[in-house]
Image (cartoon, rainbow, N blue to C red; front, side, top):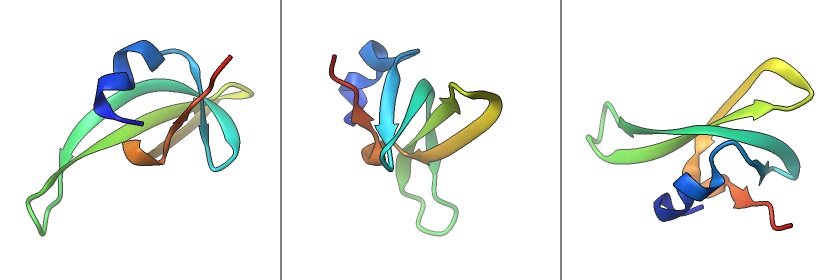
Length: 65
């Protein structure tokens, strides 16, 4: 997923590693050693409300309906 697709994908289902998750947010982070900025996605499992997955935004695929 690209950063420009974040707004339209919020609170919608997305794919990560072949599994469906609810896209809950996007966080800008800075790498401690290199100082480079990167985006991280926060995903919630719709089957288990307490399950949260954080991964690089580039690993997310939009769910097309």
